[in-house]
Image 1 (tube, rainbow, N blue to C red):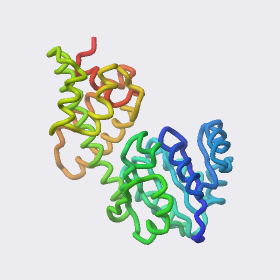
Image 2: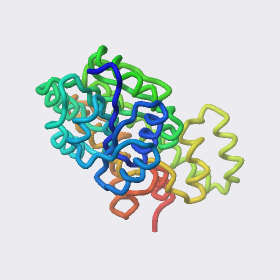
Image 3: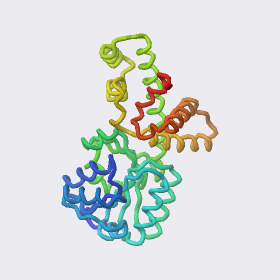
Image 4: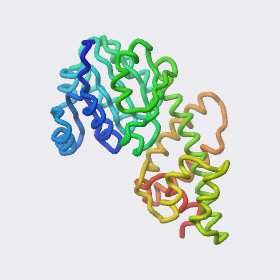
Length: 290
């Protein structure tokens, strides 16, 4: 790969747009592509990066390709489109949340054309993406990760190499199990507090100050008690992630009852039409939906 990084971003959603902005501010963003062309046009005008007409065109122009898409099949489809343009020595770094199996499949496809791959899912939410303070859990060859470190550092506060390809996604699976469990407990507890007629502001203050404090409680407690569920990570996406965790648990022949309970809850909320709500929308179920 050339010493000068020419980065392209594919997938300009709630996370991809702020990541593209940080790459532009770091002086490494050359090109963007998005399935919805108008979004790419907006980001192009804002950052000065070129708008690619196709993923293949972006791959031809860039030597580091950052992808941020919603699901496994989305990533596989994008990789299929960009592969004809990928140059030997280029690196694809995927910040999506997909299964370790999918990550290894993509790595194999890229290896066949002489390119590298890093699975680099992130944690920190939309807030972290906007601030450039995400936590990156990276899987791949250490030398490859070192070569693209300026890209990873532009979007994050922490980059941790977890092992070979697939390790990043395995780590993200652990992260999502924790997030789901914390959300189950916090939403259930706050719904309980409402039934006890406790003053919400004081309740949040006291429990946040002690051992029950958490990122989720701090960032979502107030909004969920105000029935505001448009602030962060969509619960339909967490459901998708938890189904990946469920598959991994079955392969390992282990039981994860909290994860199974969360899957049931989020499936019910999606069926009710709440899939685009932030995961704190779970409190509606804990309250008892009519």
